[in-house]
Length: 357
Image (tube, rainbow, N blue to C red; front, side):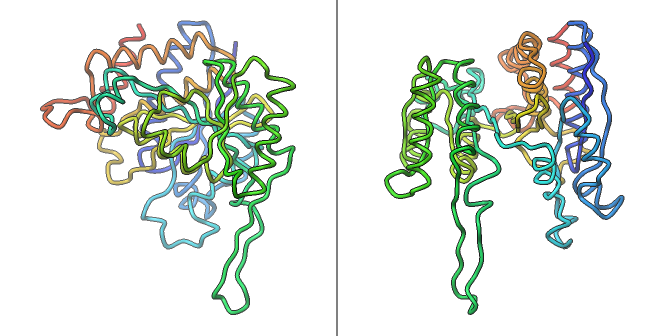
């Protein structure tokens, strides 16, 4: 089978970690009889430097034509002074809009071998956790009406959701739960917000009519923030609105011990999606062979699972990563404080490839 993948390396460490993921995909393709074809496109600061736009039309067209998109990272202090509409970060928002991506999947998992890197109490970390946050991406307060009064001394941002917007992301959450442990926790603030009351009503209607095989419960967002610290093992799939998901997904990423391990997927109605690590461009370490490639490699595995329905191939990559970590191999960001040796980014890539043989 042949798959066309658009590569958008971006800025900083983006090109390094994307290249590592490409090599992993190539080995996977050879083993399972698939052909992965890659085409690179500019975005972010690199695109701005080349053509004055953070997201050239050529990149949009290439990503729309591809079977899926593997994205690195964008931004850096070099472009802090450019106009807001030209900032590198606009590339991510523009691609989400162009591709019709309204759901973000962000897993957060503590590897048993990395329990000592977890910031939680040892007894909590020892229980382990493996959760998936399903976040709505294109609605809510980030996209509602906003403004200031004439005097400029008051401002407003409007939260708004339609039943259709809630239904489509809720279905993603229920479907994800079906593929995991069958447990969905829907997050809202229904004791205060009318949008949250509509959110809860809609999610429950879907659960009772279409997903009776999924265990559904509700949690207020402030309690969810506490429970992610107190007992993250409670959660399987967490369904959230845009703003709540923005906050909770970052909290969940931090309790794992390193953002250098965490992948994400942005999905819409088509099979195509955008897959990227959650870490930033880290321009201070770009080109130094320090960056941990695991998050991008796991993003590539998510691509195989969610866009190409290649679950066995995704398992193959994820197992190699897990085995490497279980055997004690570390990059600088996940090593113990007293460790005297660790792997460079390219060495970690090669070690994962070695375990895939």
